[in-house]
Image 1: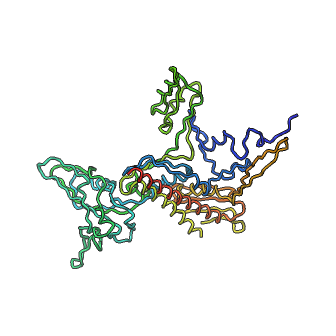
Image 2 (image 1 turned 120 degrees about the horizontal axis):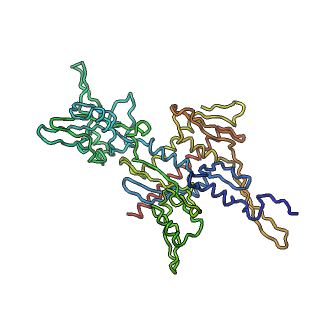
Image 3 (image 1 turned 135 degrees about the vertical axis):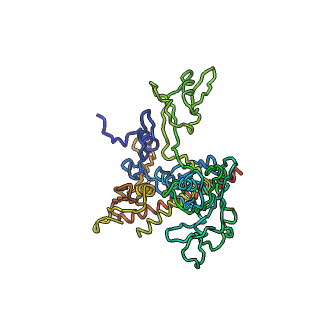
Length: 368
Length: 126
């Protein structure tokens, strides 16, 4: 009669470690033909405590295992890998990048003359969406009761016209002039003797401020079409740009977009040789598989570039036997950030992390 | 802001204004990692089978402080988040504060690692 042994003490179950299939469930999302499974993260630190396995990803473990690898970095775009971080943090950074990093964008437009075919509000909407080359960290927010001054407003002027008997011309963003001394328009007052007030009260020229004088405040791209004018039409307006966040209006979002994907994992379950190998390699539209010559005309399929896999599932579609298993690695994120120009992409990510820290601090101070 | 019983401080709901999934999901993650010191110890067993075998067993005794944690957004139009924390004895406020401090430290670590990696990359690809 065999002695009863606890399942946890069986010789082939390693003590202190998770069995293979549970570890796979914990660290990989398995992408089956119809839907992915095991998508939930097992967060709880005591989830496997009965088996003696510590599932915690606390600060010490996190600091030891966290890695960042940069794949490419340019003026406008960055692609990097974050390994060892949880989906909740990666998503928090993505949400902050899109909606909560402040930028400068045109908010108020004072129309003096608009005889073009584009309606006032449509023209103002277009002006608001133009990306400005202004570092938002040098400016303060402008609230309802504040006076617009050199610390919270940037003033631009657009004065274009198309002469009669000349062909149609296009108004591009390079014709938006920056006014470092503030608004040139005067507010109408009934009292003729009172001092003339302008719409902004700049106490000094923005040119003279040390940080701004290094680089003039303009638009990021010179060739964005704002409007088109026919003969005899003119546009004269003044636009005031203020600081805001993407949550309020998408014009204030600093990223063209920011997204992440988990690292794809492609595993060949059996050896695929000869004709089948050729068929498998040809099925994949992004060349994840490749042929390896074994000599004597023998060929074998290998996984050459799993990172390129878009999980289109062509390799497992309509196949009778399972050759390939697709999955995603849970704690490995491939982040891509495309900036619209005000801040460089690596600065944007650092600002996003800072904003998450500020949220925690705010909550901590509320709780204490 | 904190809704709970005055006699039992280990379970309460924290109602946050002007917050959404961004902070709430991250705090839920760090709350799940909260535990009282983990102490590892190795047991060396000698098997009684003719020859002595050293069989080190590592037991990880982490006692989690959190029994239940979760968040919900009562209505998407309101900017409110309710975070529920139930602990194994410690006051829920303390556990939440520790979780927030851990989250802050994790963010600082992310920031410094990322900054260092970017600088190394820039130097390498002059």
